[in-house]
Image (cartoon, rainbow, N blue to C red):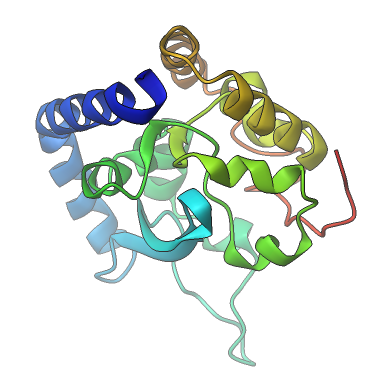
Length: 203
């Protein structure tokens, strides 16, 4: 009953309340990133959701679009702005995803939505992560986030799908608050963000 009905109702209520409460911060960050990123405060990217249905995720844009002499984007570390680094460290870049939750693309809690190109290289077990709506935070995020391996992330994602419950979601929510305040697991060692998944891992 919770998975099929109440989880979505709770998502709608808390996403709406959360967006209203965070609206002042949302507006301040939007203005700051507008100037830092030459008029582009938001980042839109196609991601697979429940049952692998593609949607556009909304995040704050933490990196600018600077390119080298050949027209190629500079490395992530060189494009990460000072404002963007602060927004990412404090997880404020996730706030716009509340709009995705209200639209029904995402849930507050669930496996993080990854890139569409990964769909073809998942193992059958790894594909189970798409049996539920992706989330703003999830079991993998509170157990290491970007600091753990892809294999471990997928193990945690699938475990969440198989054990989804109100109690587990509440535990993840509380642990997420703790992680945000401690700024833990935001990046992998030596990387501004997570490395790409290459498909050479199986559960």
